[in-house]
Length: 418
Image (cartoon, rainbow, N blue to C red; front, side, top):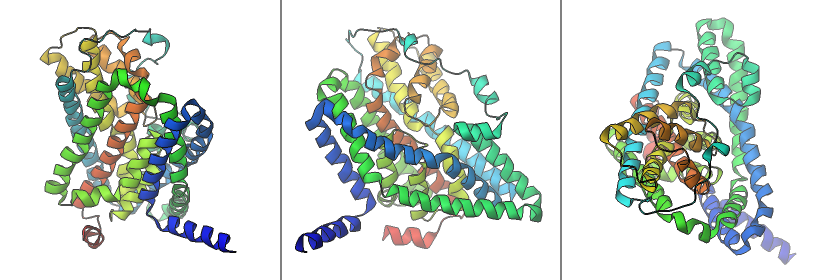
């Protein structure tokens, strides 16, 4: 009886711990377990995969329903267009700043200077980067059902926006459909909450697998690249983003990062902006952001906001140039900034997409594509950090835009800051 009571008491204490702290605990325990078990940590991967699969299960219906609800709840097409324009400009501007920071850290750390690493043919392991024209054409789904079934997020967003606008334009006749999507969206929000309760255990398994697979020995030869990317990401999040929060949004950066810590933890372990969307929706609500804004801006951000990926491009482009002894001109630096910013629009928010984008950036300035193979081995480690930046940027944009539109609960935000 005492044993059962003790177990119940321990479970009650654990349940009372904030979710972000549960996730952080799972992450740290997972890293320690992975380093201890080594390659045997591979056996824990299925647990992490189950968690990732439950998140992936939510992505398409959550994006589709929340976008339609967000658009139809605005009713004002001018306001919808204004928020869309603000989102696009904000995401493009912060992405350009991110890759500039990445280039700066690449110059500062000189990660590729003096390196003589064996190079494999990247053409055999990396997909060809998509052309920008193909990205634009591919935005329109020829079969919306196939786009939904295939999880093509950009096409899903375009179709959801078009359907949402159409429902607004037909007025009262569209209300039954609107009510249906509102009900489905609420169900998805609740399902998201249930899934997020599994996060600490999924994060534990994922981190154990990553630490066991890579270990410290594998990371040491390329530690300067990892250090440059991680410090660059930290500077962008806690430096640049904090300035925007303090001087534009007038929100305490400490409060903001405290409330988005769950989404940041999920982003770090899953390496997927789209996979972190359920957690991001929950964090936006805790910040007092109206669902009319968050349900539109966040799904859009998972597709076109790639601040962390752009920053990574800057560091890796310089790493490849230095490793091959190529001196870049100022024109080439500007080309890298422009290419990475534009390419971010069509980069999927899924693990490994940054490698595809890197081939496009390297090609734009004439650097050898074999350079991709130099960072492919540590891409997962880098992907984890850059995804945190992407997700943090999505939530920052949502908060700033909501504040500018008067769509944020000031009392809730002030209570959170107190």
